[in-house]
Image (cartoon, rainbow, N blue to C red; front, side):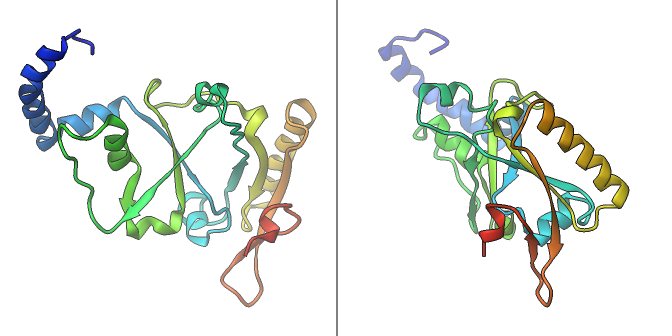
Length: 205
């Protein structure tokens, strides 16, 4: 498309394009260049996963942000997909995905390269926000629209819990009236976490 080729020229040059693409995939440059242009936000569907708290929240001393993703199926949703952190579900597989050069759409290639992981990671229940425009980095998002709760780890220090509580209270008064702070705790006699008082998580089994 960028070269403005006619249909006939596209047919004539397809073999060359596929050969170049195959070489770039085999030497790793295709993946490197693609990932250099992509930014990813990794999210999880399970806020009570003991392994996730251990790996990504300082062994229960950190905190979790809960997002409510509004999707009404409108054009606005698509335009604001990155700002609203609209995620795609990661697929887990025992087989490494292969790319059929010249026959797959770009979306399918992205799915295989960015949204597929080994079955060993299935416990994460991961969803990813993929930004192919801004690339990697730290960017503003529609916090006032989608941030709905903060969950402190069960081993968070009293001082940090008080600091976190002050921040949540400030945001609730200034920008996010519905924002609330909760704290995870261990279920007695079970290797399981609970979030008492949380209107959605408390009902999960």
